[in-house]
Length: 93
Image: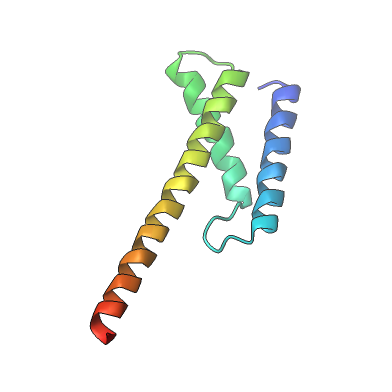
């Protein structure tokens, strides 16, 4: 992985952290483990291409996968909250 690509990953991670703090989302948080996940997913994408070098496309796909993963968790939580609200209203009203 080149230094420029490494710096790009760090910048994107910092952006995610800032956005997370600003949104104050209860379940969508970004930790140092997220940074490690982005790096590992990028490396895995390179391996899928049978390459020993991680390129920008690998990093972009890793970031997209992380975003989609977090979005799916939030969707699931929203669905669960809707279900719980419906159950509570059905029981108590």
